Image (tube, rainbow, N blue to C red):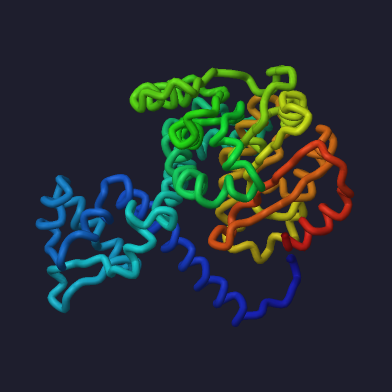
Length: 373
């Protein structure tokens, strides 16, 4: 603020923090590289090794591996001996950085940083001129989302998420009709189709690429009880025919989320269930100040979720649309009973179990705001 008296101690502390942020951002990019190249997975299996030995084990170029190790060493991710020749990934760190650490592999999420850097110029243009960046501009997004979903949803789907709904496992075992909207690469649906052969599964997604990946995986597994279709979720209309409809981290990206939720409500049988996973947050920005992943989630929202919706002249809700807005739209879509649940290990997601049975929505909103379910 012009004319304000400067607190020098506060200013210097903020300068130190800015340097920490720059270093952390740089380390984030290198963590993504470590994940994508398999370096973390390789180092997990090695005793302390030289850069040449690590590169040989990973099948990579030694010079690049050596420089990467420099970033990881100074960033506090790997350790080395006193001579600086042999490097190791501590077992305690490998618990958060390797594929065997699923569902706790944080390195998966580091990939978003490089992905968004690739569209930074287009996002800046949107800041000046409005509009959005289309899905097609994000070259690896479906691959990253498949890994993300593999950790947050697929890894715990049958053991923890589906059992949240009383009697659902038994119904799936007996045989019901299931639709997944915004199915992406189909990992969740292919898992359910494999686990519950008596049930019938359908997946919708706007992306032709994602539908192709999902279909090929279903064929590889010889699944006959699942099908995937490219579908614009803003226009689909189906009479009441599904016992269960799921949406995993998909609704807030939609151009017309209220239209999608309305169509979901219409597609459910009278006693059907809608299971929606979305980001655990408040609809009010100031109430998210202490969110453990707030900066990351607002960045993902700005750089992708909000923008792809606006690119379709949509609502642009963004990833942090929050419980209050979600409950408002669910009620408008005809859902009169909404129960929000969370998993003990997962601070990032809320799971909405919605039906068209009467309940006092105001009590649900109060429970949501308190995040006590």
